[in-house]
Amino acid sequence: MQSEKWMTKLDRKRFGPWAVVTGASSGIGREFARQIAASGINLVLVARGADALEVVGQDLKRDFGIAYRVVTTDLGEPGAEKGLIEQTQDLDIGLFISGAGTGQPGAFLAFEPEQLLRQTQLMGVSHMLLTHHFSRRFAAQKRGATLLVSALGADSGIPFHANPAAAKGLVNALGRSLHAELKERGVGITVLIVTPTETPLIKKMGLDASPMPMKPMPVAQCVAEALEGVKRRKMVVIPGRLYRIMNWLMPHSLVRAMTANMMRQSTRFVG
Ligand SMILES: NC(=O)c1ccc[n+]([C@@H]2O[C@H](COP(=O)([O-])OP(=O)(O)OC[C@H]3O[C@@H](n4cnc5c(N)ncnc54)[C@H](OP(=O)(O)O)[C@@H]3O)[C@@H](O)[C@H]2O)c1
Image (cartoon, rainbow, N blue to C red; front, side, top):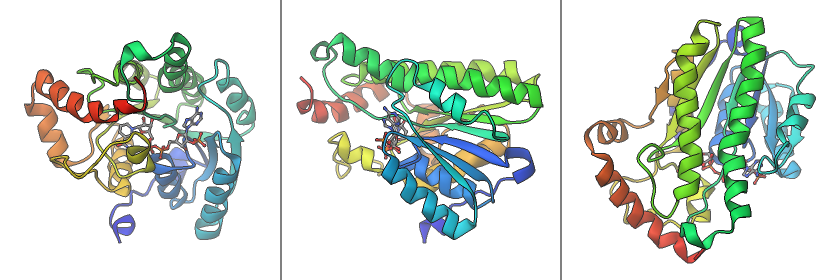
């Protein structure tokens, strides 16, 4: 089973006894929660949908005997991170996975300014503010790590996905910058450059994986490689050997042209 093959265990003393995962109800965040729980680390599960988070929490409690806390919040709303901060103040936290996000392909000119601000809030600003909060806590306790979820192409630009790419670009630059800055304080920061991964998001974005030259990877692989990177205090993780090679070898102009074609398929949703 792919989920057994791809599993990274963490040291509970270093990354526990509690971890916070945003976007924990589905896809990559849900798999982070599963692999972290398998190391006996308790979880704060964060997303908008309470029912889905409860299902995840109950499953993990049953399978791994961990405790969990559900926090529902819409991170696309300015100030929403404050509720999460308040509801985790009493916990001893050693790991923060900043994964909440989505994709919203479309022509830039077809979005309203309010939609653009919401995308930036969800996929950029909320990650920055939560990283600031948890890193302060980690620096005070001289222990702890954050993993920031960005995306392949965020640094080269993604036509027809321009604003989400810009927000993910913020996250990418933030994490890379902080990696050296926070090392001196005993705090870890790793950026996960998500390469196409089998989650419900692919369908939600209207993408057809069948013509893609490289197929989306199993979500367990993406997460296991990411957690391995966190353990090794890596600055950046790009899951999948072929994607790493492609990222080193391909010029940005070619990556942009390829992603433009892929995203153009989805613009029927917006503009
Ligand atoms: N899958 C890929 O190929 C791929 C590629 C590049 C980047 N990524 C990034 O990887 C991350 C995880 O994506 P995924 O593929 O796992 O997608 P997914 O299966 O759709 O999961 C997204 C998670 O984020 C939560 N979320 C969405 N909007 C939210 C909001 N406004 N406030 C709080 N939580 C919210 C969702 O729960 P609720 O809907 O209940 O809130 C869900 O738990 C995202 O940041 C995405 O941009 C994925």
